[in-house]
Length: 158
Image (cartoon, rainbow, N blue to C red):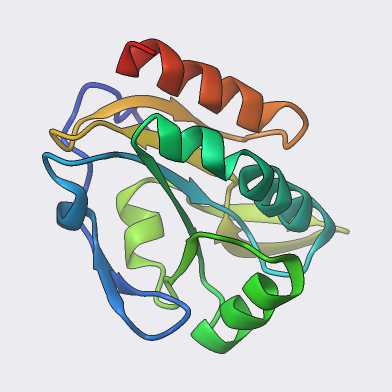
């Protein structure tokens, strides 16, 4: 997949954990969006990542940045994940993985000798004009959130 940096972010409308529809265009002209794709609710790496974003959410909010998580899990599973870990941001349901495909993160993966399709952990920083200004692909969870936060600080002028 070629980079999306510098291009208009693929627009989307997806349901969140409460069944409300969230569109990227809802934030146009208003906020930065930290859009992070992750493989699965309740798994160790995804839980660590979600909790790291949770712990930094106030810092992102002060920089006018909204965090949105995306996976192929159901809204019910998202709600359990949010409740269990006190997540203060929405998790979006991409069960048909169309948005994941639009962002180039729906990939063939291999684990324990088996091949399957799933989300490659990735984060996109989208500015208020709807442009992808930074992308992180094949994300390693450790220290990732700090790097995203530093990038938001740099681009937002804070």
